[in-house]
Image: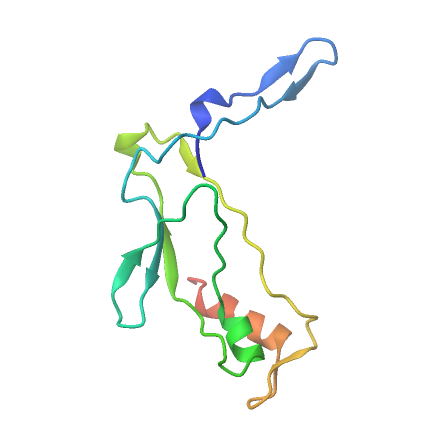
Length: 130
């Protein structure tokens, strides 16, 4: 879902003196055809995923791969934003991400005896630049 944030400036509600945001109108399409979700296919090719506006997509992550002992495979992915020169830097890509998140002490890797807390700390350290 792509939103033009220039049209979403806060509005002062004179009656209460508070700021509020207007309803965000979804753009019919991204102003940048290269913006969006990309995955690495099983053959190693990077592919842009085009999800129809009236559909929902599910992406499997590493936690679910470990919990299911590999029955579900994690999908390497990245998101490319709208290039600023195509939108004055004011177009946002909005998504709703929901993660598999067991209790921190719950074992998610039976073979290696790794809890979700240990797994999560490993993911954070692997993806954090120091």
